[in-house]
Amino acid sequence: MIRATARDLLHRGLPAHRIRVSLERNMRCATGHCGHCQLGGVLLCRDGPVIGWERAESLLSVREL
Ligand code: FES
Image 1 (cartoon, rainbow, N blue to C red):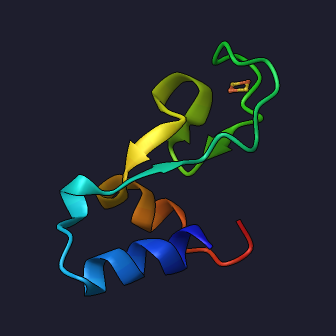
Image 2 (image 1 turned 135 degrees about the vertical axis):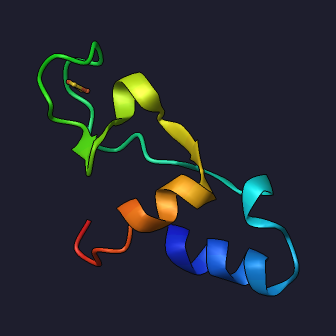
């Protein structure tokens, strides 16, 4: 759903740097220690959970995530 929405916004002319997505679905400790929220090289509890589409696009390129 996030990918589809972001692509639709891009298609409608919104620049990628204006799109922000929330990826707060994989939290456990929320302090950056357990690694449960890791997505690629990003710890979402520490580096997010709201991040720009320019960064999120590659993280969400794997369809099962
Ligand atoms: S929830 Fe544990 S490192 Fe992010």
